[in-house]
Length: 138
Length: 138
Length: 138
Image (tube, rainbow over all chains, first blue to last red; front, side, top):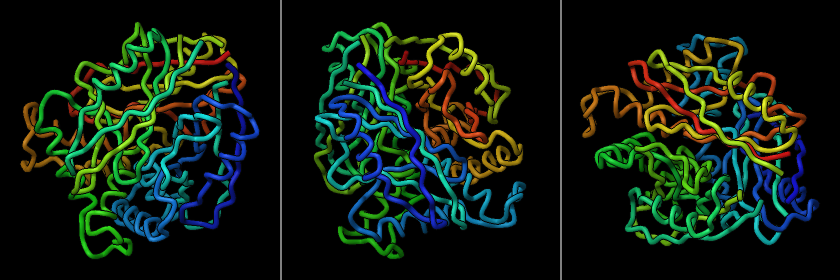
């Protein structure tokens, strides 16, 4: 049994979902681990991680529109140090979560055929985001 | 230290919560692992996994009713390829999440006395769903 | 490779977010593990775990206020055995989730600079809450 750790960095263009599946998969393959478990942690409080549909683009736009409606911008927040998109970003990150773990078998993540891993940027402006990655297996 | 992997399949009767605790526990016991960590991944984008109350049935019906209200059906989604229950299913799966990990000790999952593991089916019609399972421990 | 397990107990003063980062970190350091992965499970259905902003206090009060709005108290729930704050507590726990896993490197959790681990108490009255903790690494 062995383990490997890294940090993957992503430059986001502002609010939206970034497919990071290929970046995670590339790192996984380089380790040569065949069976194990992968852990991802988004190291931020206004960005998050989620697994969703990787085919229909409309799913992603509908998802972001829904998050904007469930945790809307507005002047009713006490925390607005960084602008009106600040607190809603924290709420949307809380709803979607910042950690994921994915079983690995035969050298591949056990995602379903239609699943991709997404980094969700909840701030309006571009940000550099880091995802801590850990793998244990053999 | 060793690991084990499997896929558990479930036929859902349509929208609702299915208690999969016994199925996971049965597989865990067969491995003989006493201490470790269990990882579950629902391999779909319109079904999800969650841990909730295993006693009062009303908690589950209230929970499903709440999800229907927070992410309602409607004609305001761009993605409706598979009908009006399609996009809300993606949203409810995102809110509840598709991965869980559970510590194991003395051969048992460390769930609380009132906790069960549920597969949440968010589509109206019956589906076959797969949960990827991984265990590491000794 | 080795593992360690424990249970951390917390007495909550009623609804609110309790920073448990230091308690988790103290236990982690005592194990001496340098690289690995930490798993946390809140063993309750009306309390939960989340990772959020550890600096601005307003983020936490805004977050709790938002949860109260998204899953409000009311007489529209079928489950009210333990009072009007019972079912909303289950819903808020479901939205935020009860499991977390955090990569460890150089003996420290790989949290971002602004991230803390919070136990969220969703019931009005004080409760004793248990968090099952598991660590695997070396």
